Length: 333
Ligand code: 13P
Image (cartoon, rainbow, N blue to C red; front, side):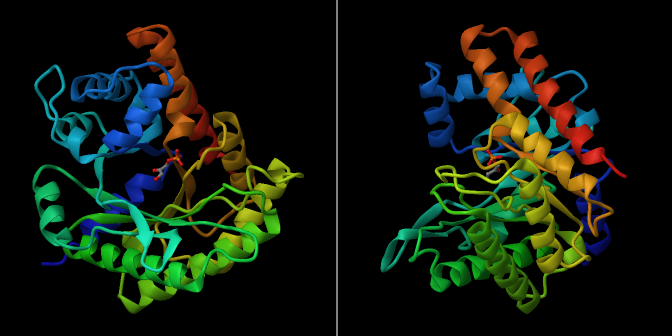
């Protein structure tokens, strides 16, 4: 059976009309780290309470087309008795699932990682689909270090795994989000970020071609072309937007359903402005929207930690960021 029409429609819904994705798929250890930093206790129940607050934000589906979940959340029930995927679907948002099992040190190159999770993937995807899952995410991590990194071995291994994952998703009726993240860590220049992001995207699309992935049935989640966090002179927001758009225009085929950017540790207002500036450079060959984690959740989490359990205040903080990013991806000139 071919899922092509369904997958095309899901991919289009994920990225169109200015809406974007809420990445709420932090693994339990990662969310625990974020909670710890703010003095919040991390248990299955407190993680659910936090996420229930996010997902029940009034009007969320006006700005958010889908939510990326972690396995624990995917199987939890909200206070009204619905599972999280059931609640999201009933409220106009597509349920998605992170399916990689993490970036692990590469054999022989412990400073770099390759993302794992292909073993048994088809079976896991079939189960998620039967529970309401519509799309999936797999994140590859590429590290820049002056002189040495990234290695060609790291880029090629991650590109191959991303393409295998994407092809398996499409065979199982799930839209793949293909996420090659070039990290902002380090003091590299905008030019170096441009070079590494271009090389990485070229490698990823070559492997997607080899594995016969249907580009109109997938969403690309790239990092922006941006100076390293520790760079002495960081490029301006306009330069980041221009370099990112130039890089994607040169490497991302027009057939791709859309680009949904990650925020990668930028502050939330910066991530929104970069998105708006990119869309002002249009018309672009694909919709360019957001799939932010921290840039959507940081303000809400700070509010949640300081005004314990003030649901309305935390929801207002999320609504503020979600609506601002919706406007930034709706900008058309
Ligand atoms: P950030 O926007 O916080 O980078 O998270 C997006 C994401 O899903 C990373 O995999």
